[in-house]
Image 1: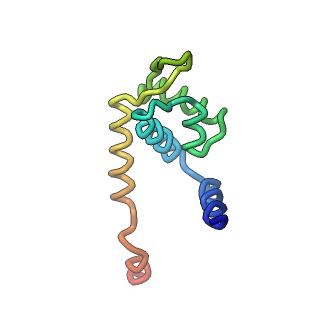
Image 2: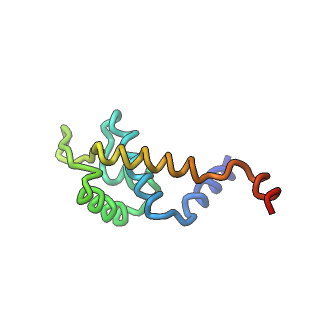
Image 3: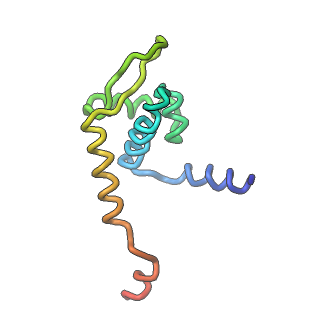
Length: 111
């Protein structure tokens, strides 16, 4: 069990592109909308980012109209994904699927 936790931690420490980080943030917010848990700390933890890095990304995503603020029953601001943000997620999945190699064996037989 401990080995799985260490493996998951190491996986999070690997390099991710900015596009993948944006995808992780948007995906986290989309998943958490039903639970009404869209505060910065929740987003940061789920996306595997430091708080201050998450804040920077959230500002950019709001400026690009991928996210917007909403007010919950608590005095905290929450984040909601926009239609443009949903479209980003769809395009990201399409690109990731199209660019993923079919299998490792196809690479070894081609050369």
